[in-house]
Length: 218
Image (cartoon, rainbow, N blue to C red):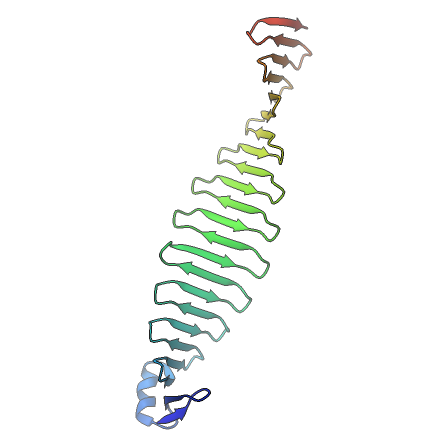
């Protein structure tokens, strides 16, 4: 049976209402209705309400009863659009999955288990396979969290703060490197080689750039 399909086009239309034999075979395959277009497209409507359109180049479009749409391209890429607006795209060659959510959040999953989150405010969060997490803020700040509990923070101006799991803390600036200990002791190494140690007891010891003690005040 030839029926009008779309504007100015003809297609072959098989339906259970007009062809008993075709309907019987279709039911066996869970297909309620099948439409063949002149351009090579084949559209099938299933009894559960799903619709599948197969194109001549091998691309397949599936429309679910929940309004989700899945497109499987001839090159192996897969794009899925959920009813809530979420879009999930799988790149076959790169083996990466790129998900975009209604909130604006984008998540990229790589084959080595690395994952990147791109937040609407410009912040990027990268999770590495070893458990390290790196956060790149939109204002230029940089933060890395390591599996052993160490946290490294870098400001917009390049100043670095290292927080260790044992409670120690380091500050790196263009003028000095300073380490602070849980007991209150503070050691500072200046760029000119001068060293200064302030103990929790109040004692202060200073060494020059040659390592010679020039002051030791208790």
